[in-house]
Length: 163
Image (cartoon, rainbow, N blue to C red; front, side, top):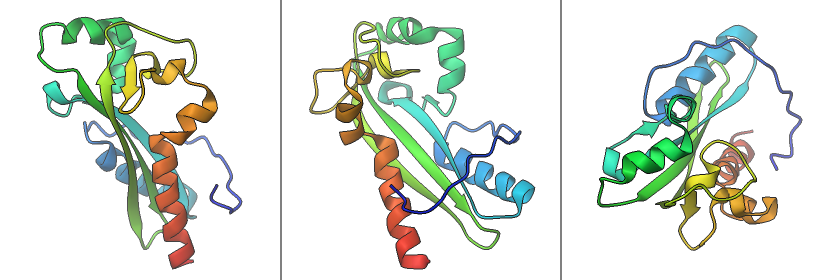
């Protein structure tokens, strides 16, 4: 999609304790650049349940590890709304410039775990305009509404303009 060669590198980066995925992606990009000393792209993704303010946000992995999708659904049972959004933030750093590109998809949290595809919160997130959770969608269906695709399109445009 980016039409540039990329190399995936596993790094041991400090975990930024921040609910905001943009702040996490920025910190990760700067830390990755500090280790590699070459331009980097990193990402972070979070789920926001609107009734809960900004939570779980970037802490979604912790929520899933501790209560699972079923626990998130159960915790929502006492709340009025099920509106949610998922955001992928892609951080870029080249030692001079640090930028973060965001892709957000709005939707709702399902009332039950549904579907066997995907990972993480995919079985409970239903994007607006669909009656399927991400986990019930084919890869092609999910790619059409992907928050990661939206963020990567911004990265691509920025790289073309600033190359």
